[in-house]
Length: 167
Image (tube, rainbow, N blue to C red; front, side, top):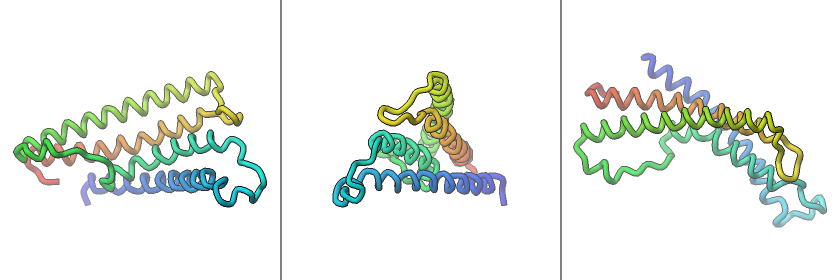
């Protein structure tokens, strides 16, 4: 078993754990969103701060599911222009696109940590509920790191295809 295969296995395990956290956030968000529609009379009053909770849960669901989405190939790719290029040039373009995406996610993770620290220093809270926002920002920043690891693996595979060694 090659080192890249082990690295991919590690990435998949981490991504599945994060996906579980994102899925739990999604289930809670669905409950909060649909609570008041048909059976809203169960507690005879609305859930306090539900809108703010849904916005934070969206952050958790999206950021924690990003790495498994990338691994399974369920993200959006627009390839209609590169399909017209020769195969070797397609691999070069794919390599540089993945390198750019990796750079953007490293920057995103860094700035999310900086933003979370700023929120923590200012003690920013949600609109209705006195819930601190900075743990959610730190969570999103941490969730960017597995995406960066997946992009490292994809960059290595693209580089191998670009130089002629099939990955």
